[in-house]
Amino acid sequence: MSDVVAQVRAIYELEGKPLPKLGETLLSAYESGYKRPGPEYLHYLCSVYRVEPPDLGFQGPCVCGHRHERPRAGAQQTAAREPDSVIRPRAVVTDSNEWASKFDQHSVPRMSRVRYRAEDPGGKDGDEEDIVLRRTLLQILAGAGVVLDGQILGAVDGIRRRMDDTLVNASVSPTMLDQWEETVQGYGQQYMSTPPLRLLCDVLLDFSEVRRMCEQRQPIELQERLCRIAAQLSGMSGVIMIDLGDHRLSRSFFRTARTAADETGDRALRAWVSVREALVPMYYGDPREALHLARRAQDLAGRAPSVAGAMAPIVEARALGMLVKRGRNEAVPSAKRALARGQAVFSQLGKEQVKDTAFGYTERQLAFHMGDTYTNLGDHGNAEETLRKALTLYPTTEELDRTLIWLDRASCRLQEGEPEEALRTAKETILAVSAAHRTDIVIHRARQLASAVVAQYGDIRAAREFRDALAAPATAGITRRQA
Image (spheres, rainbow, N blue to C red):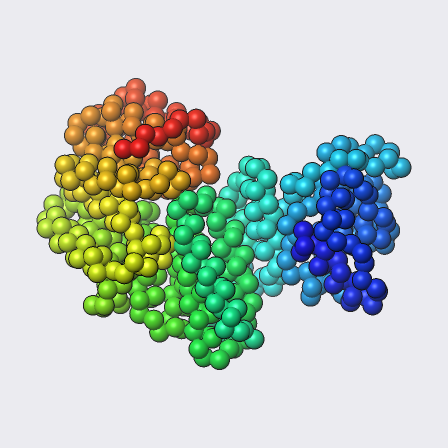
């Protein structure tokens, strides 16, 4: 709300007018319906919101006689951020002299008409992508159903491309960078509990701000810090896109993250990007490529204990486990040695390195990934014990990993010759996960389980019922047991 007031005042100042008396209290009164803006204030609110009076619940054209779909020339430089809320009527205006008395603050304007230009790197209207993501975020916060469509994906990829452009182009204060680094670490802590699409909007809006700061070359020490922040935000966006199921965009974000990380000269950061990128082919491609990326991350990490140095051998073991599942039994000893190396490095990590979830590596993640490896290796005893331990370590708010752990336990039941029990466990898991966390990676893993059942036991009734559960709308009516 303060953002809206600041933008209106900025327009007044640019036009040489005395500053208006509009404040947050008055704007709140407009939004709640206790007061109605006069023609002049209505004009400037339309300019800031980039809508017409009917979109705010008022009939007739604006007093200026022009449309407001794009910022006015004088306001273009000040309207850098989309307002956090908009005025939208609860009641319909039926007469030009009759104004709606009730307004709803949480509604959002229509989505921007930016097209999906993922293949058009020449697009120059950069702020349109920010508008799409801000409006998507407002819709999510308002509880509206949001579909990951071409429009949103276009905005996502547009922001990434603009960062690519600025990284090859190359004033910020150290204090500002301190704040950005704190923001990035905050996202790392939110990663496992915040719905992916919601978090993606937040991360990319800040990613866009960092890109703007990178547009001019900075002193070398500040430039390196900016590139580090850019690499972390881009890498996190790549991880989120894995969860959302778009592996092409995920790879693109990791490519951008590598470009930014290379500018820092930080081997540990470059190793972190590489090991996170290995998850793309591990979930959606060839495990042999995941194996290659994990080993490259180990080479980059070197011998000094680091997050990537602990995570990379575990990812290597998971990739080898997937090869074993496909019949490469000779990979079993290598997978077990990789698990041992990962555990050894993990035991040397400092407290700060094991706190985080996105930029660190926690005990619960280690238990989950080891259990996943044991599952693929067919070591059901160790798998069940390790996965049960992981469930006790994960809080109930971290739905995504807990869901994948339960699907691993269902896979154990299938390998032990209990297809009905495997499908029952998987069905309960799918029905329990909330709509916001029922992402493509969850559905993908569930479908893999169903396909494995059908391949071994035919299209049994439990498999058909499970497919029906996957096709049904997501609900959160069942509470998952703890272990």
